[in-house]
Image (cartoon, rainbow over all chains, first blue to last red; front, side, top):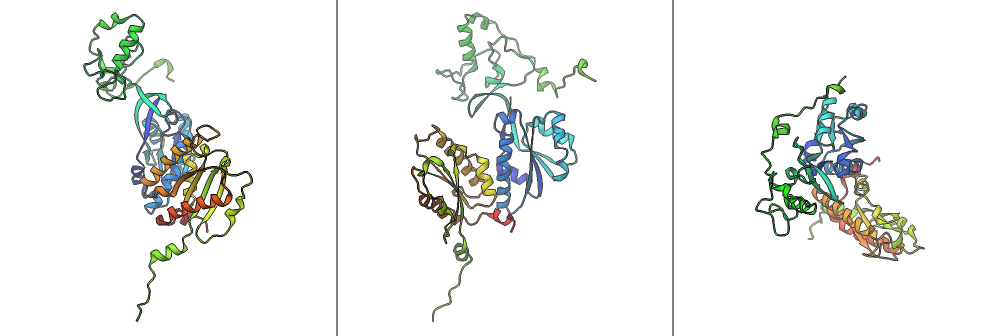
Length: 223
Length: 153
Protein backbone atom coordinates (compact mmCIF):
# COMPACT_ATOMS: atom_id res chain seq x y z
CA UNK A 1 0.00 0.00 0.00
CA UNK A 2 0.96 3.64 -0.29
CA UNK A 3 2.32 4.85 3.03
CA UNK A 4 1.88 8.35 4.39
CA UNK A 5 2.68 10.06 7.67
CA UNK A 6 0.80 12.87 9.37
CA UNK A 7 2.30 16.29 8.87
CA UNK A 8 3.36 18.09 12.06
CA UNK A 9 0.29 19.73 13.56
CA UNK A 10 1.94 23.16 13.75
CA UNK A 11 2.68 23.03 10.01
CA UNK A 12 -1.04 22.49 9.38
CA UNK A 13 -1.93 25.28 11.78
CA UNK A 14 0.39 27.62 9.87
CA UNK A 15 -1.15 26.56 6.55
CA UNK A 16 -4.73 27.06 7.67
CA UNK A 17 -4.32 30.22 9.70
CA UNK A 18 -6.81 32.78 8.45
CA UNK A 19 -9.25 30.23 7.03
CA UNK A 20 -12.74 30.22 8.49
CA UNK A 21 -14.29 27.03 7.23
CA UNK A 22 -12.42 24.11 5.73
CA UNK A 23 -13.26 20.73 4.34
CA UNK A 24 -11.14 18.03 5.94
CA UNK A 25 -11.29 15.01 3.72
CA UNK A 26 -9.92 11.52 4.25
CA UNK A 27 -9.39 8.53 2.02
CA UNK A 28 -10.56 5.09 3.13
CA UNK A 29 -7.93 3.24 1.12
CA UNK A 30 -4.13 3.05 1.70
CA UNK A 31 -3.82 6.00 4.09
CA UNK A 32 -6.57 4.51 6.24
CA UNK A 33 -4.66 1.23 6.41
CA UNK A 34 -1.52 3.02 7.55
CA UNK A 35 -3.47 5.12 10.08
CA UNK A 36 -2.62 8.47 8.51
CA UNK A 37 -5.68 9.63 6.61
CA UNK A 38 -8.76 7.47 7.07
CA UNK A 39 -12.01 8.34 8.77
CA UNK A 40 -10.54 7.75 12.22
CA UNK A 41 -7.69 10.17 11.55
CA UNK A 42 -10.10 12.74 10.11
CA UNK A 43 -12.22 12.57 13.26
CA UNK A 44 -9.09 12.94 15.39
CA UNK A 45 -7.51 15.78 13.43
CA UNK A 46 -10.68 17.89 13.20
CA UNK A 47 -11.00 18.66 16.94
CA UNK A 48 -7.20 18.88 17.28
CA UNK A 49 -7.00 21.53 14.57
CA UNK A 50 -9.85 23.50 16.11
CA UNK A 51 -8.09 23.44 19.48
CA UNK A 52 -4.70 24.32 17.98
CA UNK A 53 -6.07 27.27 16.03
CA UNK A 54 -8.09 28.48 19.00
CA UNK A 55 -4.93 28.59 21.09
CA UNK A 56 -3.53 30.87 18.35
CA UNK A 57 -6.66 33.02 18.58
CA UNK A 58 -8.49 31.79 15.48
CA UNK A 59 -11.85 30.06 15.17
CA UNK A 60 -12.19 27.41 12.52
CA UNK A 61 -15.22 25.47 11.39
CA UNK A 62 -14.45 22.07 9.92
CA UNK A 63 -16.58 19.96 7.60
CA UNK A 64 -15.47 16.34 7.37
CA UNK A 65 -15.91 13.75 4.66
CA UNK A 66 -14.03 10.54 3.99
CA UNK A 67 -14.39 9.06 0.53
CA UNK A 68 -13.60 5.53 -0.57
CA UNK A 69 -10.63 6.51 -2.77
CA UNK A 70 -9.45 10.02 -3.54
CA UNK A 71 -7.49 8.72 -6.53
CA UNK A 72 -10.67 7.83 -8.46
CA UNK A 73 -12.78 10.53 -10.09
CA UNK A 74 -16.07 8.81 -9.19
CA UNK A 75 -15.30 9.07 -5.50
CA UNK A 76 -13.73 12.54 -5.70
CA UNK A 77 -17.05 13.72 -7.13
CA UNK A 78 -18.68 13.03 -3.75
CA UNK A 79 -16.92 16.15 -2.45
CA UNK A 80 -18.62 18.43 -4.97
CA UNK A 81 -21.54 19.45 -2.79
CA UNK A 82 -19.28 20.37 0.14
CA UNK A 83 -16.68 22.38 -1.79
CA UNK A 84 -18.83 25.54 -2.12
CA UNK A 85 -19.31 25.56 1.66
CA UNK A 86 -15.57 25.71 2.44
CA UNK A 87 -12.79 28.20 1.75
CA UNK A 88 -10.02 25.56 1.66
CA UNK A 89 -9.58 21.81 1.57
CA UNK A 90 -7.22 19.81 3.74
CA UNK A 91 -6.77 16.36 2.24
CA UNK A 92 -5.36 13.43 4.19
CA UNK A 93 -4.99 11.33 1.04
CA UNK A 94 -1.65 10.46 -0.53
CA UNK A 95 -0.12 12.86 -3.04
CA UNK A 96 -2.22 11.31 -5.80
CA UNK A 97 -5.48 11.99 -3.97
CA UNK A 98 -4.50 15.55 -3.11
CA UNK A 99 -3.75 16.24 -6.78
CA UNK A 100 -6.98 14.64 -7.93
CA UNK A 101 -9.01 16.89 -5.61
CA UNK A 102 -7.00 19.96 -6.66
CA UNK A 103 -7.50 19.11 -10.34
CA UNK A 104 -11.24 18.49 -9.99
CA UNK A 105 -11.84 21.64 -7.90
CA UNK A 106 -9.41 24.29 -9.17
CA UNK A 107 -11.49 27.06 -7.59
CA UNK A 108 -10.39 26.21 -4.05
CA UNK A 109 -6.95 25.84 -2.42
CA UNK A 110 -6.15 22.23 -1.52
CA UNK A 111 -3.53 21.49 1.13
CA UNK A 112 -1.88 18.14 1.93
CA UNK A 113 -2.33 16.91 5.49
CA UNK A 114 0.15 14.05 5.19
CA UNK A 115 3.56 13.35 3.70
CA UNK A 116 3.52 10.42 1.28
CA UNK A 117 6.63 8.36 1.84
CA UNK A 118 6.70 4.89 0.35
CA UNK A 119 5.09 1.70 -0.90
CA UNK A 120 5.12 -0.54 2.12
CA UNK A 121 3.82 -3.55 3.94
CA UNK A 122 2.52 -3.67 7.50
CA UNK A 123 5.02 -5.97 9.20
CA UNK A 124 3.23 -5.91 12.54
CA UNK A 125 0.72 -3.61 14.25
CA UNK A 126 2.10 -0.10 14.17
CA UNK A 127 5.12 -0.94 11.98
CA UNK A 128 5.25 -0.49 8.22
CA UNK A 129 8.32 -1.13 6.07
CA UNK A 130 9.06 -0.30 2.42
CA UNK A 131 8.69 -3.19 -0.01
CA UNK A 132 8.54 -1.54 -3.45
CA UNK A 133 10.05 1.51 -5.10
CA UNK A 134 8.00 1.41 -8.31
CA UNK A 135 11.24 1.05 -10.31
CA UNK A 136 9.40 -0.09 -13.42
CA UNK A 137 11.60 -3.16 -13.99
CA UNK A 138 10.72 -5.79 -11.42
CA UNK A 139 13.46 -8.26 -10.46
CA UNK A 140 11.58 -10.14 -7.72
CA UNK A 141 11.61 -13.30 -9.83
CA UNK A 142 15.41 -13.40 -9.64
CA UNK A 143 15.75 -12.42 -6.01
CA UNK A 144 13.44 -14.95 -4.40
CA UNK A 145 10.62 -12.48 -3.81
CA UNK A 146 12.73 -9.96 -1.88
CA UNK A 147 13.23 -6.52 -3.40
CA UNK A 148 16.84 -5.29 -3.41
CA UNK A 149 15.78 -1.95 -4.88
CA UNK A 150 13.41 -0.88 -2.12
CA UNK A 151 14.92 -2.79 0.78
CA UNK A 152 18.65 -2.27 0.23
CA UNK A 153 19.92 1.14 1.34
CA UNK A 154 22.13 1.17 -1.75
CA UNK A 155 19.61 -0.54 -4.08
CA UNK A 156 22.37 -3.00 -4.95
CA UNK A 157 21.74 -5.34 -7.87
CA UNK A 158 24.42 -7.71 -6.67
CA UNK A 159 24.87 -8.10 -2.95
CA UNK A 160 25.39 -8.17 -0.11
CA UNK A 161 27.83 -5.29 0.30
CA UNK A 162 30.55 -5.34 2.91
CA UNK A 163 28.45 -3.49 5.44
CA UNK A 164 26.18 -6.27 6.61
CA UNK A 165 26.36 -6.62 10.39
CA UNK A 166 27.13 -9.97 11.98
CA UNK A 167 23.51 -10.26 13.08
CA UNK A 168 22.28 -9.83 9.51
CA UNK A 169 21.22 -6.20 9.89
CA UNK A 170 22.02 -3.30 7.57
CA UNK A 171 24.96 -1.04 8.40
CA UNK A 172 22.73 1.97 7.78
CA UNK A 173 20.09 1.00 10.36
CA UNK A 174 20.46 -1.65 13.01
CA UNK A 175 16.70 -2.25 12.99
CA UNK A 176 16.56 -3.09 9.30
CA UNK A 177 17.41 -6.52 7.88
CA UNK A 178 20.06 -6.64 5.18
CA UNK A 179 17.85 -7.73 2.30
CA UNK A 180 20.73 -9.36 0.47
CA UNK A 181 21.42 -11.47 3.54
CA UNK A 182 17.75 -12.53 3.43
CA UNK A 183 18.03 -13.27 -0.29
CA UNK A 184 21.06 -15.48 0.29
CA UNK A 185 19.29 -17.28 3.15
CA UNK A 186 16.20 -17.90 1.05
CA UNK A 187 18.28 -19.09 -1.93
CA UNK A 188 20.18 -21.48 0.33
CA UNK A 189 16.93 -22.82 1.80
CA UNK A 190 15.73 -23.57 -1.72
CA UNK A 191 19.07 -25.10 -2.70
CA UNK A 192 19.62 -22.50 -5.40
CA UNK A 193 22.59 -20.52 -4.15
CA UNK A 194 24.34 -20.92 -7.47
CA UNK A 195 21.71 -18.72 -9.12
CA UNK A 196 23.13 -15.76 -7.22
CA UNK A 197 26.55 -16.21 -8.81
CA UNK A 198 25.27 -14.70 -12.04
CA UNK A 199 26.18 -11.00 -12.14
CA UNK A 200 23.17 -8.87 -12.85
CA UNK A 201 23.83 -6.13 -15.39
CA UNK A 202 23.21 -2.44 -14.65
CA UNK A 203 19.50 -1.84 -14.34
CA UNK A 204 17.50 0.04 -16.94
CA UNK A 205 15.98 2.86 -14.93
CA UNK A 206 14.25 4.51 -17.88
CA UNK A 207 10.89 3.02 -16.88
CA UNK A 208 11.08 4.54 -13.38
CA UNK A 209 10.94 8.24 -12.48
CA UNK A 210 14.41 8.64 -13.97
CA UNK A 211 12.73 8.41 -17.35
CA UNK A 212 10.58 11.48 -16.69
CA UNK A 213 6.91 11.64 -15.68
CA UNK A 214 5.39 8.22 -16.17
CA UNK A 215 2.39 7.66 -18.43
CA UNK A 216 0.77 4.31 -19.11
CA UNK A 217 -1.37 3.99 -22.19
CA UNK A 218 -3.69 1.09 -22.95
CA UNK A 219 -5.41 1.72 -26.28
CA UNK A 220 -7.76 -1.22 -25.70
CA UNK A 221 -9.24 0.48 -22.62
CA UNK A 222 -9.62 3.97 -24.06
CA UNK A 223 -13.01 5.29 -25.13
CA UNK B 1 -1.52 53.73 56.72
CA UNK B 2 -2.19 50.46 54.94
CA UNK B 3 -1.99 50.63 51.15
CA UNK B 4 -5.18 49.60 49.38
CA UNK B 5 -4.95 46.04 48.13
CA UNK B 6 -5.03 45.75 44.36
CA UNK B 7 -6.51 42.54 43.04
CA UNK B 8 -4.62 41.28 40.01
CA UNK B 9 -6.38 39.78 37.01
CA UNK B 10 -4.68 36.46 37.75
CA UNK B 11 -6.16 36.32 41.24
CA UNK B 12 -9.62 37.19 39.98
CA UNK B 13 -9.45 34.53 37.29
CA UNK B 14 -8.31 31.91 39.77
CA UNK B 15 -11.16 32.88 42.09
CA UNK B 16 -13.94 32.23 39.62
CA UNK B 17 -12.33 29.46 37.59
CA UNK B 18 -14.05 26.17 38.41
CA UNK B 19 -12.53 23.66 35.98
CA UNK B 20 -14.99 21.45 34.18
CA UNK B 21 -13.66 17.90 34.35
CA UNK B 22 -14.99 14.93 32.41
CA UNK B 23 -14.27 11.63 34.15
CA UNK B 24 -14.23 8.62 31.83
CA UNK B 25 -14.15 5.54 34.01
CA UNK B 26 -14.17 1.80 33.44
CA UNK B 27 -17.27 0.12 34.84
CA UNK B 28 -15.08 -2.51 36.50
CA UNK B 29 -13.08 -0.14 38.66
CA UNK B 30 -16.03 1.13 40.70
CA UNK B 31 -17.96 -0.70 43.40
CA UNK B 32 -21.26 -2.10 42.02
CA UNK B 33 -23.42 0.21 44.12
CA UNK B 34 -21.30 3.32 43.59
CA UNK B 35 -23.35 6.48 44.09
CA UNK B 36 -22.64 8.37 40.89
CA UNK B 37 -25.07 11.13 41.73
CA UNK B 38 -22.25 12.79 43.70
CA UNK B 39 -21.19 14.42 40.46
CA UNK B 40 -24.24 16.64 40.68
CA UNK B 41 -23.19 17.91 44.09
CA UNK B 42 -22.25 21.54 44.03
CA UNK B 43 -18.62 22.29 44.75
CA UNK B 44 -16.97 25.66 44.69
CA UNK B 45 -13.72 24.21 43.35
CA UNK B 46 -14.64 22.33 40.16
CA UNK B 47 -17.42 20.74 38.15
CA UNK B 48 -17.45 17.09 37.11
CA UNK B 49 -19.25 14.89 34.64
CA UNK B 50 -18.95 11.15 35.15
CA UNK B 51 -19.11 8.88 32.11
CA UNK B 52 -19.05 5.11 32.57
CA UNK B 53 -17.33 3.00 29.90
CA UNK B 54 -17.29 -0.76 29.33
CA UNK B 55 -13.46 -0.62 29.38
CA UNK B 56 -10.95 2.21 29.08
CA UNK B 57 -9.76 0.57 25.85
CA UNK B 58 -12.86 2.14 24.26
CA UNK B 59 -11.24 5.56 24.64
CA UNK B 60 -10.07 6.81 21.25
CA UNK B 61 -7.94 9.91 20.65
CA UNK B 62 -10.85 11.42 18.72
CA UNK B 63 -13.13 11.07 21.77
CA UNK B 64 -10.67 12.83 24.02
CA UNK B 65 -10.01 15.66 21.58
CA UNK B 66 -13.71 16.15 20.87
CA UNK B 67 -14.44 16.48 24.59
CA UNK B 68 -11.79 19.21 24.80
CA UNK B 69 -12.98 20.84 21.57
CA UNK B 70 -16.44 21.04 23.16
CA UNK B 71 -14.93 23.11 25.95
CA UNK B 72 -14.15 20.77 28.86
CA UNK B 73 -11.16 22.03 30.84
CA UNK B 74 -9.77 18.59 31.59
CA UNK B 75 -10.31 14.86 31.28
CA UNK B 76 -9.57 12.24 33.88
CA UNK B 77 -9.56 8.66 32.62
CA UNK B 78 -9.94 6.09 35.38
CA UNK B 79 -9.04 2.48 34.65
CA UNK B 80 -8.12 -0.76 36.34
CA UNK B 81 -4.60 -1.45 37.65
CA UNK B 82 -1.94 -3.02 35.44
CA UNK B 83 -2.56 -6.73 34.76
CA UNK B 84 -6.06 -6.50 36.17
CA UNK B 85 -7.96 -5.48 33.05
CA UNK B 86 -10.86 -7.81 32.32
CA UNK B 87 -10.16 -7.30 28.62
CA UNK B 88 -6.53 -8.37 29.23
CA UNK B 89 -4.73 -5.27 27.99
CA UNK B 90 -7.47 -2.69 27.50
CA UNK B 91 -6.06 -0.36 30.13
CA UNK B 92 -2.60 -0.52 28.50
CA UNK B 93 -4.09 0.41 25.13
CA UNK B 94 -5.85 3.33 26.80
CA UNK B 95 -2.61 4.43 28.41
CA UNK B 96 -0.80 4.53 25.05
CA UNK B 97 -3.58 6.56 23.45
CA UNK B 98 -3.64 8.96 26.36
CA UNK B 99 0.11 9.49 26.11
CA UNK B 100 -0.31 10.11 22.37
CA UNK B 101 -2.98 12.74 22.96
CA UNK B 102 -1.00 14.32 25.79
CA UNK B 103 1.90 14.79 23.36
CA UNK B 104 -0.45 16.42 20.85
CA UNK B 105 -1.86 18.74 23.53
CA UNK B 106 1.67 19.73 24.48
CA UNK B 107 2.57 20.43 20.85
CA UNK B 108 -0.39 22.74 20.34
CA UNK B 109 0.30 24.47 23.66
CA UNK B 110 -3.01 23.43 25.22
CA UNK B 111 -1.15 21.71 28.07
CA UNK B 112 -0.68 17.96 28.46
CA UNK B 113 -2.01 18.18 32.02
CA UNK B 114 -5.51 18.65 30.71
CA UNK B 115 -5.58 14.88 30.29
CA UNK B 116 -4.51 12.16 32.69
CA UNK B 117 -5.12 8.62 33.81
CA UNK B 118 -5.56 7.14 37.27
CA UNK B 119 -5.80 3.49 38.20
CA UNK B 120 -7.47 1.54 40.93
CA UNK B 121 -10.34 -0.74 41.91
CA UNK B 122 -13.50 -0.47 43.99
CA UNK B 123 -13.81 3.28 43.72
CA UNK B 124 -16.88 4.87 45.25
CA UNK B 125 -18.61 7.82 43.63
CA UNK B 126 -16.95 10.13 46.11
CA UNK B 127 -13.52 8.73 45.30
CA UNK B 128 -14.13 9.36 41.60
CA UNK B 129 -14.86 12.95 42.53
CA UNK B 130 -11.56 13.14 44.38
CA UNK B 131 -9.80 11.94 41.22
CA UNK B 132 -11.69 14.60 39.28
CA UNK B 133 -10.47 17.18 41.76
CA UNK B 134 -6.91 15.98 41.28
CA UNK B 135 -7.26 16.68 37.54
CA UNK B 136 -8.95 20.02 38.30
CA UNK B 137 -5.97 21.06 40.40
CA UNK B 138 -3.61 20.11 37.56
CA UNK B 139 -5.70 22.10 35.08
CA UNK B 140 -6.05 25.27 37.13
CA UNK B 141 -2.61 26.71 36.29
CA UNK B 142 -3.45 26.27 32.58
CA UNK B 143 -6.56 28.40 32.81
CA UNK B 144 -9.84 27.99 31.00
CA UNK B 145 -10.20 26.00 27.83
CA UNK B 146 -10.42 28.74 25.16
CA UNK B 147 -13.00 26.66 23.28
CA UNK B 148 -15.60 27.67 25.87
CA UNK B 149 -15.86 30.98 24.00
CA UNK B 150 -17.47 29.08 21.13
CA UNK B 151 -20.22 27.51 23.19
CA UNK B 152 -23.73 28.71 22.45
CA UNK B 153 -24.65 30.92 25.36
